[in-house]
Image 1: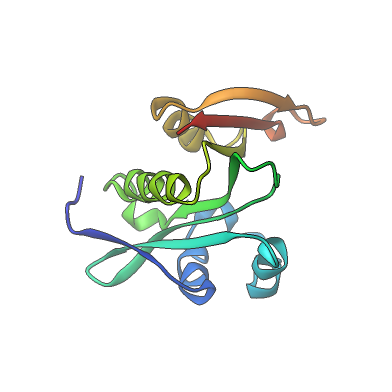
Image 2: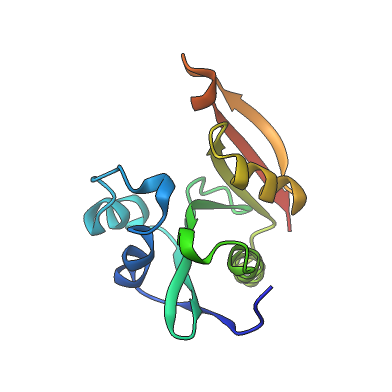
Length: 150
């Protein structure tokens, strides 16, 4: 794990710099500034980016999707494929947890897909529990809902 990874709350432009190099999202032309901003508009939200030597390499965007006073939703997360396995996602998630606790949330919720094996593995290893499976026609596209008590 790289100790010189720095995590900062930032703006959507920094998130988009990283997002273009997240291979899982590279085919989605709709992941633009407007798409992101529409999702968290008028909701409590946070945009955090991991930097390695001032290069943005990973991000998390989360917002208060459920408005239940306890759950904060980790909506989008990704790490540039060139910088994986250096600890960026771990540091981002810990920052997200600490941030959510400071805001009074007691759970993080996230959704991923069967096809996103690396993310599923990361989430399970980091204490997230499966809560629901949204079935799709192609099983690899099933959505997996998880949560972690923080």
